[in-house]
Each structure stands twice: as C-alpha cells, then as structure tokens.
Image (cartoon, rainbow, N blue to C red; front, side, top):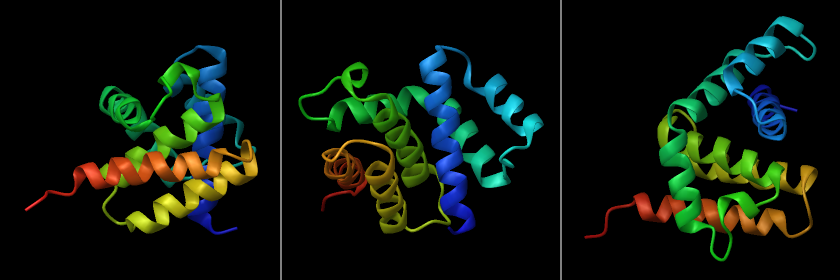
Length: 135
C-alpha cells in the first residue's frame, strides 16, 4: 500500500475512533503519534488537523450533498471517510481530485458496507461539482 494510502487509512482510523469515543480529535491524534504503532506520518497529521480546522465547513458540505441522510445518520466510518476526503479535495492542492475520490471509495469498500462506496463517490462528486464555477 502506498504511503499516502496508509496515511489516509490512519487518518480515518483516528477520526472514526474519536467519533466513537465522543472525544476531542487532536488529543487522540497526539496519543496515536506517541504510541507509534502503527506509525503516524506527516500526511496523516495534515489530514486530521485539517479536518479539525475546517470541521464546520466540511460537515456543512457533507450535509448538503448527502441526499436523504443527515450527518448523524451516516455510518460512523463513512462519516470519517467523507470528512477526510472533503478536506483533502478542497484544501490539499498537491493531490488530484480523482485520486482523493478513488482512495475514499476504496476505503469505503474495505471498511464499510457494500453500498457505502457508491454513496461516498456520489457525495464527494457532488461536493466537487459544487466547487466548480459555472460560466
């Protein structure tokens, strides 16, 4: 697995765990860094800190494009994947949009339900399309 793929998986793990615990994300991230098992790299930190920094905008965008679902009704792991991917789509400029969406879909396939990958793809595509100015 490529380094950035591992970083995304670890970011989703931290976001998911923090969501389940109902706790603060950054202290949990610091714990995981200190544990060192598995190692937490720079891109994972960038993703998790970015999700925290832009959480209100990220959650608003997910709500707008999660047709028929409120953020609270989404499966926890799907919510973590979407948060990480929306941050990376909109605020990380050195990763192509198609790569972000593909990686998020692959995470959904491996970590969530059979329907989640299509749903994640649809939400992220909607978020991306909304960001493209129309002429």
